[in-house]
Amino acid sequence: DVYKRQVSGDNIEDENEVVEENVSEPEDEVEERINIAVMGTDKEGLRSDVDFVVSFDPATKQVGVVSVPRDTKFVMTDEMIQSLKDRGRDNFIPNAKGVRGQCKLTEVYAYAGEGYRDEFVVMALEEILGIEIHNYVTVGIEGFRNLVDAFGGVDMVVEDRLYYSDPYQDLYIDLYPGYQHLDGKKAEQLVRYREGYAQKDLKRIQVQQTFLKEFLKKVVSTENIIKNLPDIIVNAIKYVKTDISVKDALKYAKYVTDINVENVVMETIPGEGGSYFTPDMEGVKELSDRVFYGIQPEPEVIVEETPVEEVVETPVEEVVTEEVAEEKSAVVDTKTLKIDVSNGGITNGMAGKKRDMLIGKGYNVVRTSTYNGSDRERGTRIFVRSAEIGNDLIPYFVGARVMVDTTGVIGDDVDIKIILGLDEK
Image 1 (spheres, helix red, strand yellow):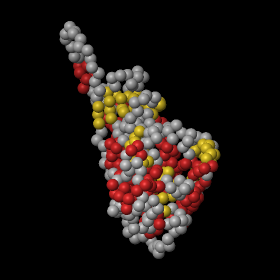
Image 2: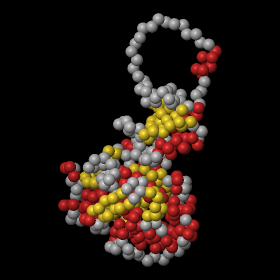
Image 3: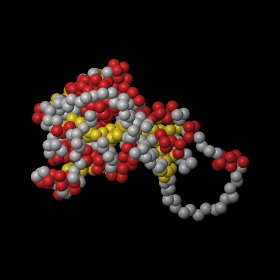
Image 4: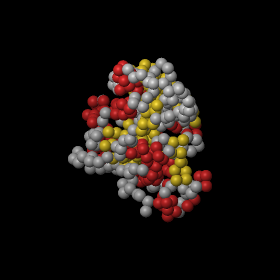
């Protein structure tokens, strides 16, 4: 049978309805990592317009957030299809591009039918990410506004001029760039906007993650919120649909002050865009291993060799002086070399952020730039002039590898060129 949660928020018809519980101070602790699916629905409540998973490891106090684009290609499992058939929903089995069960992630919510919507999206996320999800939280548009207002709004920088009007969706967005206070209504405009972005949903996900981080910063840094957090949670939980009990919500809330927001990992699954977003499943596995299981990939060092035509030369006896021998055996200190950090990812300002980090570690970063090449990769590439250089830089980047430059990527005025990958956030 299809996985069905015993305590289902889907059974709450009104998103403002809340079941009264006898709430006492939670005594037990969170012992193992917990993964919570978060879904934001559209105006009609028939599509999950936003999908991400929050993972918390109580042992390390580490929080990870992995977003899955709404247009991600997904094929329903046999169990999901059988569930639809058992409930007389044969006509709701998707068949996109002739593939039985295939649809976009955002459409799973609608195909599932009443009482199964949240569970189906949870199952889809589990299938895509290869993880177990323990709870879910579903937020409608009105619930999102109320939730933000319950915590007093968020102060943050809006990067762009955002304007969009769609009366059919009851959507009116009108925000100006700059540092400002976002109440629930303005926050909704920020996280729903995507039409003017070149990268559409991928850029919107980036903005949503930035908003979420600023929201967390406010929660953990505002004394009044921390002091009244139990009361705020009891009040705020009525704005969402969830299978998390109030008691468990309070148990999780005890860890809020232990979280270092700057160390929260926020990522989006890799893949190729288009009308469908096709996940790179090998990349998704690496991401899931890293974020949900704490498994770090082995660093890879690649030495690229350029074929050299055979040249017949007159043998010349090499004169090896003491100075030359000493130079050959010397170990190069990377921190004495000039480094260029080039942003080949999608996050604005990332080159400057990595520059500051490296300078703080004692490295000599002399320049930042934007990488305009077409060969962008998920992992960061560290171009060096010889194989014994640069390995000490690998731990500071995501999926990094060292490559000996044979094509002039580095240039003449620096010694190392670091091209940031798409996974750098």
